[in-house]
Image 1 (spheres, rainbow, N blue to C red):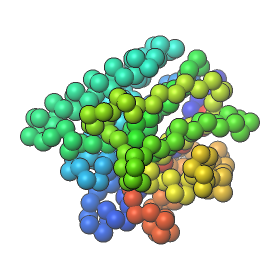
Image 2: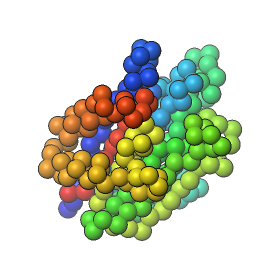
Image 3: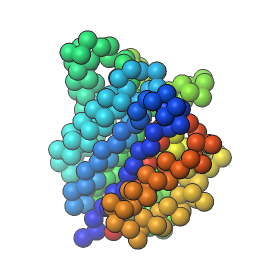
Length: 242
């Protein structure tokens, strides 16, 4: 039976390092036999508690999706789970005497088992799945009128921007990234992965165990040369079915 190996890392962006601000991205994942659930959240730079929000939302979604029976996922169920997580985040904010908006974060997530592949997306960031033969499907960023405008789970109109995509491909690879990785991991069209970057990374990980592979991702994302491309926080999660 093939199982998932997951490699993931976050790196604080140069803009945050310069102001001594911690990374506001977060990721969580769970792999149980053939099932994989993973999420990446990017905290809004303008929100004071966004790092907490990103960690809370990504962790809660992975935990709650992991409880669902195989093949039971529907758009209605996903929205219901996010409603519950948003309400719990509201209670967390209220207890801390903060506003819900202080915990703003985007969300890009995936559920994969033997029967279903589902991508869940709110705001920017990217989700991509690939087959062993190289077929690829992406869920691309959604931005507003301005490049730095996007939507968060804390937004009032979050339901209107929630995108749920069921994929019929026999998936062997999953890539999730926050928007800080987009400039060097997407091609110029923004509709496909940039192979000169992603290809060597994936080929290396295919021959590497999870812990050293994640450390290598951390080093790549934290390389000073990436700061010449973007000053944003960067998170990349790559899962390979072996």
